[in-house]
Amino acid sequence: MKFTAEMIAALLGGEVVGNKEAAVHTVSSIEDGKEGSLSYLTNPKYEQFVYTTGCSIVLVSREFEPKQEVAATLIRVENVGASVLQLLEMYNAMKPQKSGISPKASISEKATVGEKCYIGDFAVIEDGAVIGDGAKIYPQCYVGDGVKIGAQTKLYAGVKIYEGCVVGERCIIHAGAVIGADGFGFAPNASGGFDKIPQLGNVIIEDDVEIGANTCIDRAKTDSTIIRHGVKLDNLVQVGHNVQIGANTVSSAQMGIAGTSKVGENCFLAGQVGIADHITIGDRVKIGAQSGIDRDVPNDEVRMGSPAQSGKGFYRSFAVIKSLPELNRRVAALERVVESLKSNENE
Image (cartoon, rainbow, N blue to C red; front, side):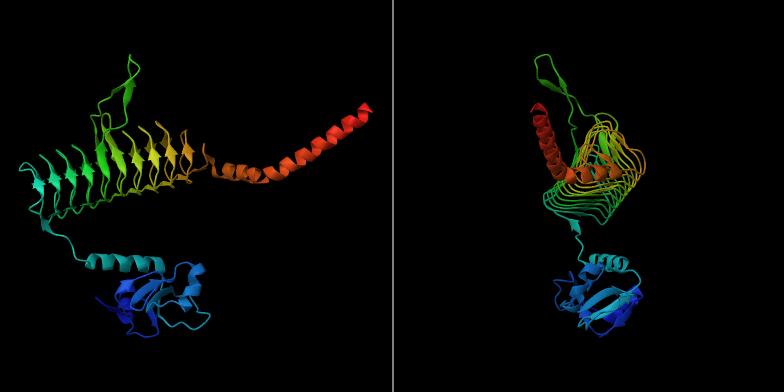
């Protein structure tokens, strides 16, 4: 489906500069744009591409003043980022939606499936599972005994949800994620080996959570591992047993949280952050990439490094590290002076 600049401007409350009949049918980056695509300028470092892009339409802020001729049609808007999000949501909503239940799916007679659901080929829905209205279960998913899936939630191909776990409404769980596998619990025994500790709890995922591909969230030993509403976890994240993650916390890829730790609300955990067991992290905490957290962190703090320290402390330490080669040279020069003075005294 095609949209003209005039139509897009009316939707966004924007102003067209150029050809109102310019039409687009897709979205692209500004540097690689082709005719028939729409792009946008949100970062000034990409302004150079406004003058060379092949895009038919480019969204810009109302304050943008081109420094040279622009071939594309411009649409001036109040907030480029918000406008792009609005358009992408509209475009996504217009894509064909999966529907119907495949005859190749295995659905227990004791399961409950809501209205207008999609269940793909070779998906397995076990006894007592409840699938909410409008949920989409893509091919080769496994939904275990007694699992509850909320309305409008999507499980992409190959997601595995073990027995007794609960997933809220409007959640998105990407391919290969595993929800409710056993927590990593073992006790040393008299023979020098390890006995497995039964993991009897479950995982509760509240509403509007998104979980990336191949992420694993372990079931609790007792009670529940809990992911609060609005949490966004990237690909390849590991969440241990009995962990709790507060509302609207975001984590980048390869982050790992060990068992029984608690992360507060509105936190940001960057890529490859590691959190030790039984740690409590407050609300609105920011943790830099590859940081190792081995002690509690109060509200509103920043931590960086491994072992992690405050943001200011990290940058002070880093400044010293950068100067180490020069300090080493100066110390070596002082040592030579001292040795020379000692030699003179001996003479």
